[in-house]
Image (cartoon, rainbow, N blue to C red):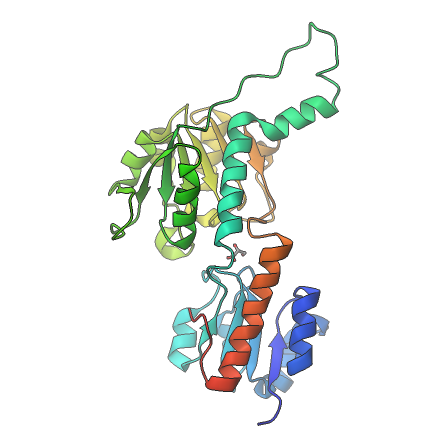
Length: 316
Ligand code: DGY
């Protein structure tokens, strides 16, 4: 078989780019001054497309690649990939589940602890010199205890279960909300998201993004979480009504938030910048050397398996 030709939609890690270049003929769309003109002239030459959860694949790009046989995406999220269009064409989509469960769950706990204990604000307090300043200066406010608290999880998928297991180490009681109860898990299913929010001290959002979950966490859910409750989002910004979240935080109708994702990222609501009870990350929950290496390996393994056996390893 001829060496397959891949279209690379965005820049990837150096290790993954090197591995793909060693086995395939790779063309980077980002090198093109006029990507649309390039696709119109050369779209028919590509066997595979490499993309990422953040970048996705829309129907227009698929239409521009008439001989496409496989897609390999870096990441677990599928909300930016037009799966209806790929299925209609019978194009398998490989992605990278499982290998990032640990790091995303770790990030959920990092955000939970940081929000409840004021880690980022305390760091700013020390750097400003307030700690070593005059004794009359305001002392750093007390935080909230995470150990032993009640943890609500919205979305008990692979990552949600990893978060729930970590909670045992913090002696937390766990309940979760999914549309349907998950069989054979030790945590209680709460059929109503509002009731889960009312019950818990910390609500971790780790449901898949997309139209079905858009604004699942709305003003009512936030009000049920209440002035003592914290929310953590390591899923997609779209799952929370961000305007409602900003107003709940500004008005102190919830205690605080730890956010890795935003509705219009990388834009972040200006109101959040001034709030010490909000900790923000630039969508890096899976962002460790080890996990990004494993994700890159799975992207390449999916392509290798497809071109060898006709099947990707992890198919969406
Ligand atoms: C994922 O893998 O979906 C991460 O959120 C990166 O977009």
